[in-house]
Amino acid sequence: MYDAIMAETINIPGHDGELIEAYYARPLGPGPFGSVVVIHHMPGYDPQTKEITRTFAVNGYNAICPNLYTREAPGASPDDAAAAARAQGGVPDERLVGDVGGAAKFLRALENSNGKVGTIGYCSGGRQSFLAAVSLPIDAAVDCYGAFVVGNPPEGMPLKVGPIVDKTPSLACPLLGLFGADDSHPSPEQVGELEQALKAAGKTYEFHTYEGAGHAFFSVNRPSYRVEAANDGWQRIWDFYGQYLSA
Image 1: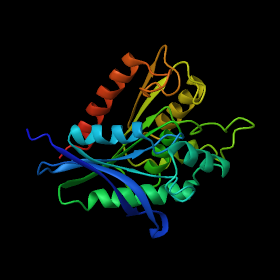
Image 2: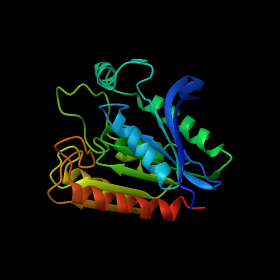
Image 3: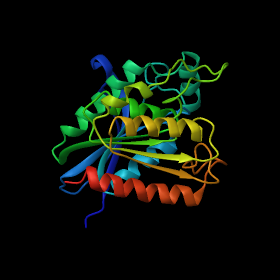
Image 4: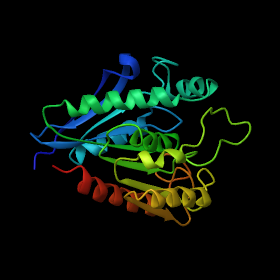
């Protein structure tokens, strides 16, 4: 199997057609390939998220990570851009849907695309992956410990977002959820509330909660990293996308 990839920074139309920065990685084989929109975590559009984007390409998916903070801090470091976005309350939901929709449209238009697009997000991106899946024609969605799908941010947190569990009936694709038992955002109780909403709406979903893992257990460069949970989570992602995004 030809395993070369190409990765580069490009600009794509996002919300309202406005050009935004994005990191794009693709296999160099003929395809057809499924595609993934990678939604970065609150710390921003950083090297670790770009590595995740390349990992999807290595495993046979076209992948793109839109820089959700392009407007707040164009050209800034990930830390500075994340700080600027936090100061404004985070990414507005409507704009997020427009940016992810633009990324999905870009992926579907590729010559080597099979037409199927999934989303994956971590931390705030997990919530945004769910939001995209209840708002757009997505084929499969992965929520990695997405906070505030259920519940509100605690007092003092700058995020201006609210719960979106009420949108569950609009979910139009299968959902994979990966969570830590020691997390507080989302807590196991909040994960349970989301699961009940999915059951009540008759949705296809698969949830896994890892004992001994808290928030950000996929983050290899942070103390929260949990190798066993992350390795198992990655395998479940490959199995899930293999089922719903394969040609």
